[in-house]
View 1 (tube, rainbow, N blue to C red):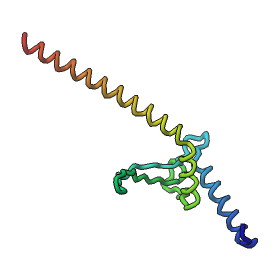
View 2 (view 1 turned 90 degrees about the horizontal axis):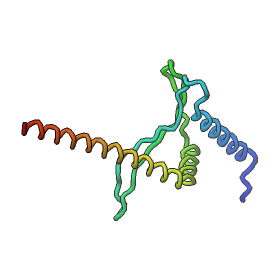
View 3 (view 1 turned 180 degrees about the vertical axis):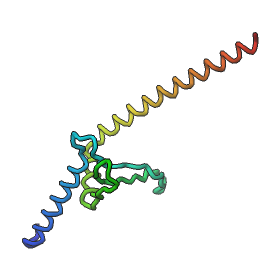
View 4 (view 1 turned 90 degrees about the vertical axis):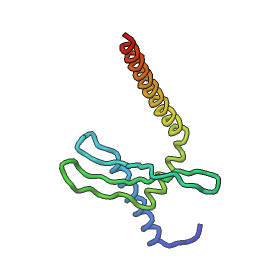
Length: 128
């Protein structure tokens, strides 16, 4: 590691501490009046040659309900570390996505069955 100097090291440590504080601000306290968290949003699909990629954004902020103000906690360091954490949680994320899709599939199948019952009921009444 190159010698970067005491002041530079202190600056890096301060940035790390600020990022840790910003991440801690994303965890709600037991008080449900706190509004905080990482807000993820799917934006679009992009094409990179033959591959499709999802464009996702996220923000980090905290504040208190009842107050219109909030603090933006986003920084390059926070973003890079959250993306790194997402990568390390890949298996859990995939399992969660599968569970969400299975629930959606079940709800869709139930809706389809209900619609089929309505159609049969309508057709039966029409024949009477």
